[in-house]
Length: 187
Image (cartoon, rainbow, N blue to C red; front, side, top):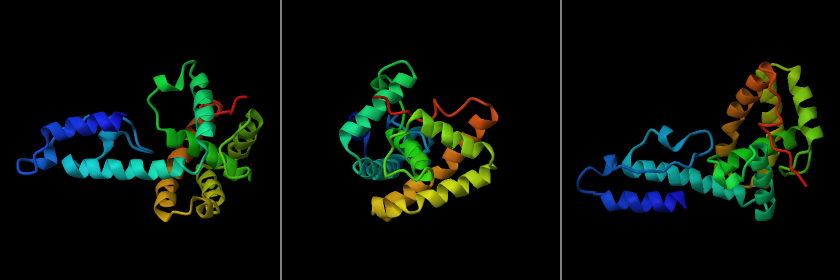
């Protein structure tokens, strides 16, 4: 929806002949690891880069049942005391964060986590350096390449491991826990 509106606005002001690279756009849905305003390209190349990221994220999300994703997002919203549709967040990031934990815990390919799963993961990471957590998550995620079955999508998702492990390290260092960062699949 945000893309449709922004794309329409963009083309109202687009001019290939007069400054196509600097035409304004108003996309605010964040991509995995980067807010829309963080993309360095401009104009037409911005649209290309943004749509490419969005396409890769959509391919990832299509690996899962839509009802399962909606269930997870509803639980995510409950973490913040509101309906998930009121929040601006990246859906792929919520799925992927849980998927990384599932991979480390050697659960089946998926993103359903319990409170015990999150506690177990937190205990595992609590004794490791950030580099060791990165290696653990990276190694656990490698077999998922076969499930994802698309090298571009896999490579795109794999870049999130460093962001994920940084976030985990900060939360453990601050003793804020992982229960709000990861999403427990409520019943």
